[in-house]
Image (cartoon, rainbow, N blue to C red; front, side, top):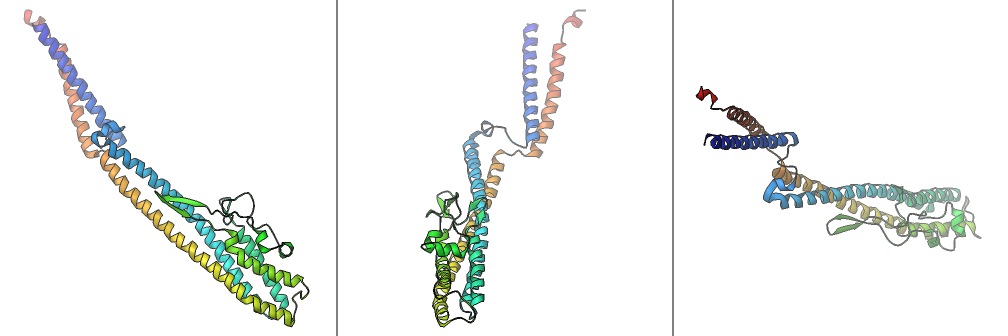
Length: 304
């Protein structure tokens, strides 16, 4: 009878020791990782909510990164558009001049600035090429090439599809502009001026002839129209920049909210975990001592 009760006591003490060791291990793991558990099973009924929140957090991070990349592209586009606007403003000044030599000098300067801007790249991609990246959007380098072209439209190599970026669930934004849309009017003005300069009434010189003066007077409104078109594009790009900035900030706020939710579900209370660890350590010591004492129990001293 003594053997049976001693065996039962030993088994009970061993189970208490193992339980205390597990509690100490779990508390120590929480102290080390800062988490309630290392898998979804450990958070119990909140597992589904935790999984959904983490998935939403990853989406928010992805959309925020897409917003940052788009923001950088739109900034590059803004710089290119502003440079083109300045060039067309200079062209407008040139066509109102009465100095023929100055006219063509300014026309060439404006042409180079326009073509360089239309062929600008961002992250290795042409800003105004549409979805085409194998060739520059404008295929000429100087005014003589423009004179040789059948029409100004022939110098553009962009396709008609603007890049589109998804910036939120169910929301996409067209971020690119096409060289033919942005520079079509001003390139047509360049060709008319270059053709006139290379034609029977050219070249422009000082003093200008009556025919040259009349031609430039008639071209002023075309250049103003080209500038207005560019300023509209600058405004459109600026509006998109504001949209993207707002979306980026929204995704940042969403991440902050989700991180708080996730923390509430999976982060351990470190003070509580430290207290449980101390209690578990004490329980292990007591259980180990009890188990050791029971193992030393013998009837031999009582039989002497």
